Amino acid sequence: MTGTGSRLGMALAAALSLTVTTACASDMTQSPDGKSRPPESSIESVLRTHKPRLLALDGVIGVGRGLCQGRPCIKVMVRERTPGLARRIGAAIEGYEVEIIETGPIRALDGK
Image (cartoon, rainbow, N blue to C red; front, side):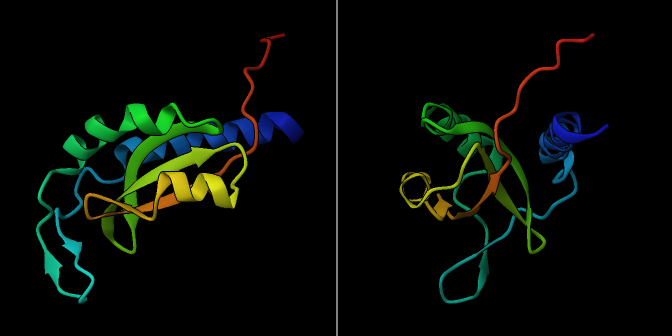
């Protein structure tokens, strides 16, 4: 793959890895004082609650779970990372760190 196809393949691989990365992850998050504590809600519950809001933001093209420094986190894929979009997404949601991944536009290949 080259050019657009390569970028699309990388974006799809990243999206798939977001779904399976945390299958064996611990359900501990870190509080602001640096101590580990169990989150109030599971990451699956937090994603169910917040995914529709995140996907409704202009520029957000994907939401999933993953690992950030060995802990469960929320990964948000965006076409272009801007300060305004990053503020609307937030740095953390219900105790889970948010990582914003700029993918650029993702387009389906025409299959020819």
